[in-house]
Image 1 (cartoon, helix red, strand yellow):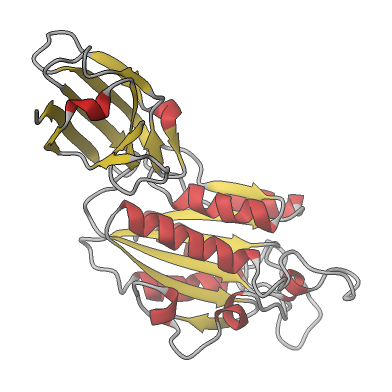
Image 2 (tube, rainbow, N blue to C red):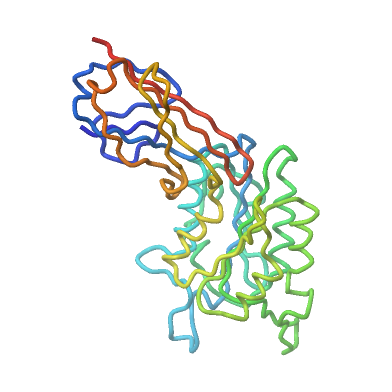
Length: 327
């Protein structure tokens, strides 16, 4: 019989036991049993306010020439941008208290939630989500997008953690009004550099960036001038080659990962603990240990388990559980 010890069990275990409490079960259930220990990685207890800044410029929908598909067109009723945001919201809510906001942009701000909500459906109650996230028209202006992001970030109280995730497939290449001059990276009119620095340095927000597709010049600009650093000093930037990678990449940026942790177990009232490093057992915000060969005859009084871990966003979690025999 397999056992999963932890909340939000993703496995098909026959017996599931939540932690931080004592359990009494029949010893016969643990004859020649394999015991796995797992659960969700919990985040900083401070509420997290997360803003997704999503590019809906023309290159997302159409390539060159315009008959070719773009970086993230609507396919089978959805697109990578929408799936990425939906997946990140689901994973983040599983880790702890969090709220969400969305700004979409091309040359101008196209849609803005204006504040924070618990779901996309609450955010845009009378809209079709694919119409919002899977659009593609016009140029790309970082400055307008990041100015609106500042407005939305200001709706977040000082007691909340502020996070911004900027998703685009191109460099700032807007056109000056009534002219044919490309903005490129030189002009504050559209390059977003001043706004990004204000968000990172004056507002104290995390700013993660994702470049979708093959755009070496834009990727380098985003990495060097827009992206921020994480709590451990790591650069918060990912280049996703396609929409499938985009979904996982956004989850990686927004997830609160552990920096260290261990699980210890021993027979009840025994002196010696056995230890397992948690880092190799973590995947997509969940942890699950290798199976422990376990038998009630080897643990005549039961078993106890303790764990601890630290996360990138400054949370230290400790937990315990035990099994004793009811017969």
